[in-house]
Image (cartoon, rainbow, N blue to C red; front, side, top):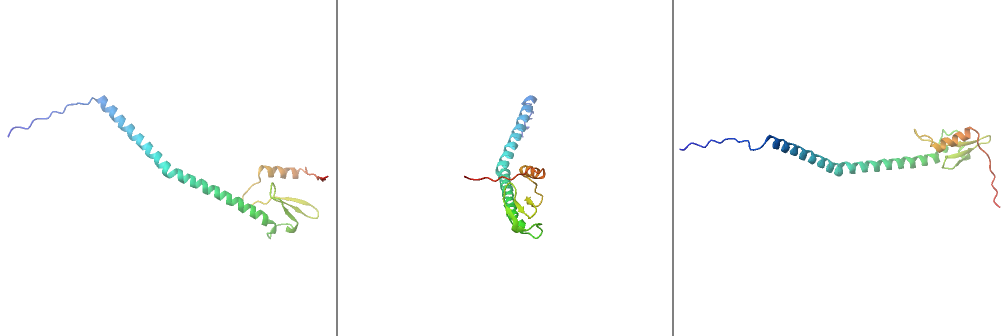
Amino acid sequence: MPPLPQWKVVNLIDPLVTGIIAILVLLSFLAGALIARSLVFKKFVEPLQKERDSLKSSKQSLATTYGKITEQFAPFMADYPYDPQRFRFIGTPIDGIQFNDDEIVFVEIKASNSRLSPLQARIRNLIEEKRIRWLEFKIR
């Protein structure tokens, strides 16, 4: 049997070309990862964020509705300090006015940890500074 030929390994690829190919493979991998991340984000994350925002908006709307309903019934609750028959609901910018025999009380009803709006705080300050007056407007 004849002897097998001896294979000689020849360095056919220059080290510079090898480095360039390695960098291109790495860049291709990174580009693919970024594209995959973008596709996953668009397919899964964006719809979940939209649903979260919608639920948050619905929750806020329900809280506002609950607050408006509560405001109308608050004068009839047991711990309301005045006669509910003498309360007049306004709604905005304050909830109502309590007409007592010896005083008139501007009433703002707040649930939970809610705060006065800037307009309500300004109205409160005007009342506390006694910057209130009576106007009788006659129609002719």
